[in-house]
Amino acid sequence: MSIFESLTVNLIFLLFPFLVYGIYMGYHNHVKEEKVVLDLAIFTSMFLMIRYANRENFIANVIFINFPLLISFLKKRNISAMILSAVTIYYYYVVFNIPLLYGIVEYGIYLLIYFYLLKKKKVEEYLFDCFISIKAFSITFTLYIKEISLSLTLERNAYILFIIILFIITMTSILLLIKEGEKIIEKNKILKELQKEKELKLALFKLTHEIKNPLAVCKGYLEMLEHNKENVEKYLPIITDEINRTLIVINSFSDYGKLKIEREEVDIVMLIEDIKDTLDPIFKKNKVKTKYDIKEEEIYIELDYDRMKQVLINIYKNAIEAKKEEENLTIKTTIKKLPTTVEIIIEDNGVGMAEETLEKISKIFYTTKSNGTGLGVALSKEIIEQHQGKLNYESKLGSGTKVTITLPVKEKGQSLNNSNS
Image (tube, rainbow, N blue to C red; front, side):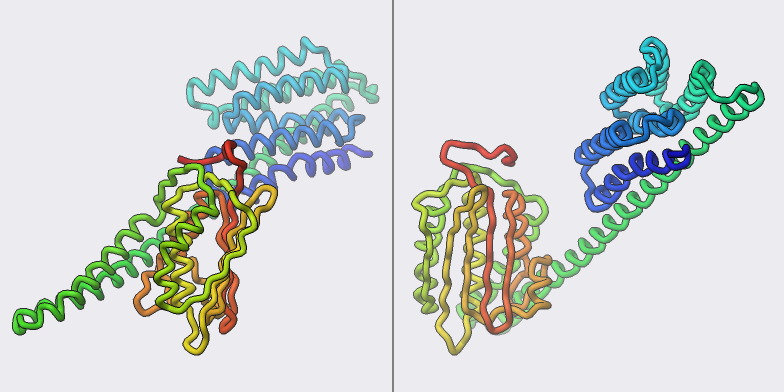
């Protein structure tokens, strides 16, 4: 394999993990997660080059194998930098017979310079130039002490100069490529933030609209009371209802985006029984037939009892409101216990939803009801996600709706590792 073939192979091994890192971070925006994924990319890149690169070509290896270490320095991943330094020293010793002492001195210098610049807060400003300069000298010295099949001094010097130039150009180009990738990721994050800001402005506009209407109604009736006080008993319930509706909208909007989940060990079967007792009068009033397919006697989950009850009641009420005029409504509740999750499935034979409605149902303030707030499903989805679960709607217009809640399950007495408080 020629030097250029080796360079190409090593370049692929080097850049592929960082490409995956860039794509992943393009869809995620968590600082802690970013550091872990970056470390994973750095070590994966190093592993691929050590494990699969052409070991017979010293030049191709020396040009690329130091790049993960350089990235660790520039990204201030201290522990990663020290580990990679030790790995590189050992790799050079085993594969290329570079003396351990020589490697320890060289990479010790890198670490000393790094921590000095880190203390002075000038890592980004000077580290790359320092690293390239020392590494260029190291490559020159190593090539002089190694046997090169060029007998003439001029050819030997020209060869070494070519390698140094190739090394500098390659390292600089790859670094610029990665920086351009980071700029794209950053722009993507900015676009996401702008989209969130746009959605928030739209949500505030809709909130204003939702509050404005009932307040206008209240104002109208109060003005009527000034001239027609004998209708107080007729108008006051209407005013009270409109005020209550306004408070529901405000409270729901206040909850959205900043929920606090208080977990406790709950038997989900008992929770369903509690909701059944709560809604039984409403079911009877609307002539709703209920079916329950629950084979387990106890299924314990760590969850917020009141929040989960809020979600389930919202689903049942939506099902009741979706009743067809000409048909009796049937609501079936099924609980399936799987090895690591539990599914709560609520199905109805109501009017169902069109595909367009189904796509927008979880968006804040989206509603097809004349007196709906458009916050119920959005809030329910957030509550379920806070429990590390999923909320899924399946529906067809005229064919009813199926709602599936998937939650992580636990045995009694055990605790979920990633529970929130």
